[in-house]
Image (cartoon, rainbow, N blue to C red; front, side, top):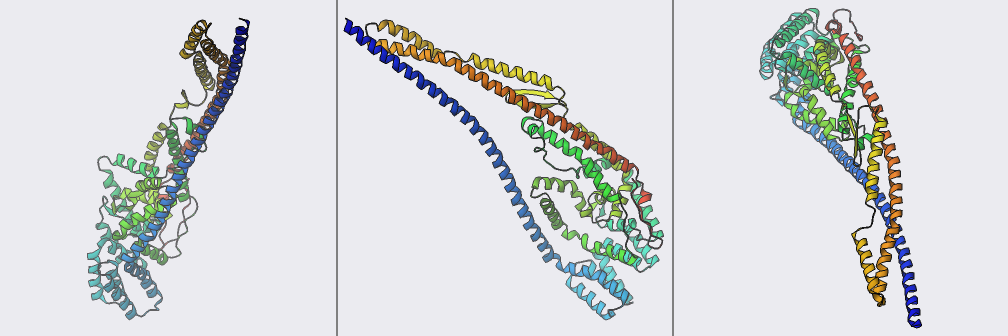
Length: 571
């Protein structure tokens, strides 16, 4: 009997030792699980950074490819223009050369006649070739040839030919011929459908190239055009819409996520905020555009000969309708290059300024194009002043509309999401309420997590099974050992609950501190963003003041026949 008791004690000692070892192993496994949990959290963070880095890489790669493609296309388009219209370019270069050679009389008339006739043969459809033949015949005093060549030039392009010879007559100080050609040119015009080269006439008028009589005639015609257009139903609304698009074409397309990184990550309203900042930045961009136009002096050409030659060169080189489709493609490539490969932004800019590349527009659209897109309209700063001055009231109305819309697009309530918590603010002034709400939400999560820390069904089953097996195993060492092992496992699990609860409390305390810091940083960024938006919006008042100080009479240069007047800014 004593021997049996000794064996039982020895066996139980071995079992208890095994249970202690099991408890140590469970502690080790628990520590390893914590380590794995931390590693998993770090891995998720690293994956998030890698995902963002990959997205940035893909975007940069796409931009680089679009930039390279645009540069290649631009070269090919220019080569195609040169291949298809290269002979026209030769004719264009001869136009002012013939006039200047005639001025200094260094070229024989026979040579001029031979050159113009050769150009006529090499460009069978181009309007300028017979116009140069007529010019050469006029210089050679060959009336019959001049009339026949002139008739052919008019047949090919009446408007360009009329404007071309109106400028030549002005260059030669032939007042009557100048007025006759101008009158013919105006007679061909429809203020609802003007060709793009009409800006050359506006350029001449704004820069004082025409004499006093011609200037007065042009001014009356322009006033009549505006009166005729303004009698249309919906004219005022059309002007507001037209100028609104023109002003919006100056809206920058910047990404402010780096400056406001927390809002960009945590607010679902970020896209609207970013767009609103760009919308408000439009005021400063337009103000700078107008200031560049109106500030400083306009340096005039030293003589009417130089002024007219510049206009003639522009007329014959910039407004060929056959080249226009390729010029549109070239302009889009230019914008993509200017935007460093951002095709979407370039396309948006192109669509906003596409009216400046239309073959025909009404007179007010012509003024809008000249004022806002000189690089595609090919106008001087004097013409921009003239266009803005004549459109001032329409610009003011459109700017008021755009300003109201830009202010309306600024979100008033901003949502901030931190994991499963969400809060709203307008300007960050309710920081304490948001922090309290966040803390309450995290406490609820902590309590819910702590409530989950308890013995589960399997543990209670192990306890019941262990008790039953202990009573049944009083005479059976195997059942007794199994029952004690089940009870020991349940006991060890129960002892681990306190450690798990302590860890949960520590994790939530750390989460509470980190979340509060992130929330404060987000609210601080919102305060800065509101201040930034107010500063951008303040430029609207400066722009309005600049426009209100402009009048059409201040922005028309005196004729070259008189003392030249140079305009300074009216602001």
